[in-house]
Length: 585
Picture 1 (cartoon, rainbow, N blue to C red):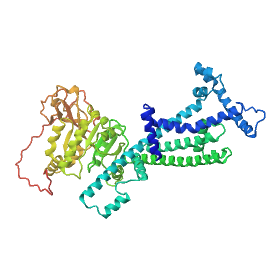
Picture 2 (cartoon, rainbow, N blue to C red; picture 1 turned 120 degrees about the vertical axis):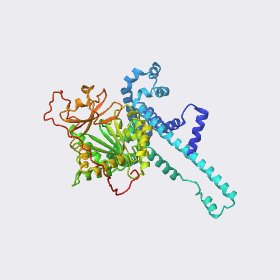
Picture 3 (spheres, rainbow, N blue to C red; picture 1 turned 90 degrees about the vertical axis):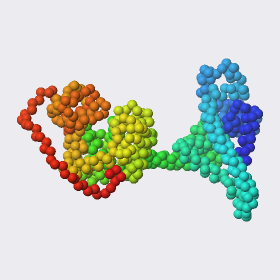
Picture 4 (cartoon, helix red, strand yellow; picture 1 turned 30 degrees about the horizontal axis):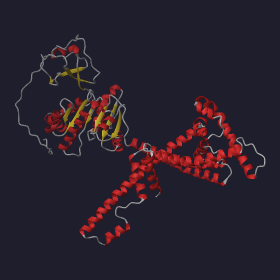
């Protein structure tokens, strides 16, 4: 009822008296200034009865003598305010106010000169007014929202009752529910609980705002009561005293004598203890949430020239091992893994592989960082700094159908291509595909954007090669991994316009075995008269990418012998047994 009366008063003043004003400000102003105005009038009355400076008069009654004693303290305080603020007033007050200073106890003077003569009082009242205005506007907006919801639910209840009566099955149970008011009716506590839960779940600053609101209300109400009860009736001093009671529970022991003042001080102190307990709880919960968020891998990666692995499958640990071997010559590197799995679980798998007794994983100075998230989301790609990475490896999921897994890889490539900050980067993208029939899809959605590796097809071909040529598996393992020698592409401008025969001995610590043209075409063991053009890269077999250089051409070949001729043997029928079956066999 009080809230409705206040709302009606607000609407009346807004519509009839002050259309351009916010009624919450006026209501807060009136509520705030009422005790202050009463205290000020009481002080002026004491000052006048005490003859401004507390001088006694002849033939005074005992009541007047007590007023003189009280007025003496108030007069001394007023005189202190006058002396402390006279320089400010003389500097900034208009001439009209200067003339009014010659008239003692002038009401207009006290009203107009208050901001100049009492800056502390004026600024304190202004801050209290702003805080009261904010809280009043919030409470009235919540009341209007609750009122709208109640009206909407009342309409829904009325419509439901009409439907029940129309169907003719309004039985005793429905009548009882209607009479008890349980059909769509909510209590004030339920609405309060619902709104608090709404703000706590939608805003991370809701708890802080609630704490500040409670603190402001406690200080404002306590300061208003103290301003009326204390002798000086200064609202700024009352606010400061109220704050000391809230901040330090032991301060209220020095409160002036008097039951009412001590009761106020005790109440403010108890409220301050509850507020600080709430503050400690909020801070502890915030720190705990931050620690949990860091454990879950939600923070951003600040790295550059690193390797990003999108997804996780049974090949991830082997890929991490090979990247660590490749980074060994550079003193190590950084690998960032973004997968839709729990960060602790991924770290546990890596730790188990490192601590394995048989063939342990060796990082060799490489740092591996895990982050949990969906690799298809642009915000997650930005979180792992994919735009500044040296290379990106997208792995297919094992627990999906091959076609479904390949469709996710297509979406992954489209997500990387749509990443605005990724467009102008020279990052090399490698995508794993399960079915060779889906390889052409990547050329349609993102031509020349990513290198597609059909793992099942490549592994199947290598297995057939090793089955037909025993011992080839050891050679392939040596060349494919970063242990020992491996393949490297590099462009050498000094070898342009030379034939492949002429460059076969131009590397002291590498063996050239092929050429990759500027168009992307690869020639393995090309013809001797194949001319190297500008932009072509030479494929060599070397220990590392920085372990070989082009010599000056002053090499000598010793012990030249005749190359043995290839002896053609009669072809026979090969018999191969497959154990198991796969769709791409």
